[in-house]
Length: 248
Image (cartoon, rainbow, N blue to C red; front, side, top):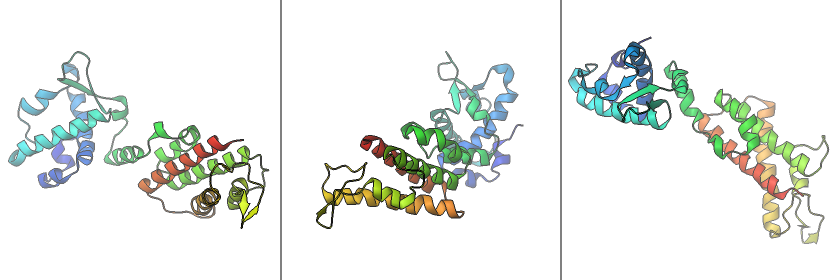
């Protein structure tokens, strides 16, 4: 379905007030329909789109609108949603397959949120088991799954039993080599090269993470925003890398 820009955002001041990535979502919906109406031409011609004939979506401020649309088009290209055609010398583009899956402004908002979590930088367990839930917008589930993977990894690496759980598991796994000035048997994942104070901090870090991020999610629904979930999941990914490094 073809959507004119003015039908998507009727007021020109509202359009010019949009951030570049927000305007890119509006422009993408317009370009999908625009490309479909120009199929016999083989895609979207950059120069024709802006100059021939002059666009008349917002006649009173069309020049400012065009500059904003150029910025939004550059954003779409950098995101891989708009792709230059081979041998077109920068003149012809088409909407990518991923771009065509976005059929509403809500879809685009979800796409932008998915970009908050850098899949390529995540621990493989997080990337394979947690990222899909984040992509679906199930942020509380994604956080719970991330820290469940941390708990399972610690249990397996320390060779604990299935009934060893939660904060107690973390404190046993990372037990410092000294407690209140007396020697103690270090936990199987304790980094004994660290000073005692840092060994204690490591145990507190893991126990606190499980207690604060995993346990509440397993007992009740916890409202979680995309930005917060992404940051917490990256933290879980870092904890998993620490476990990998400290495996006996």
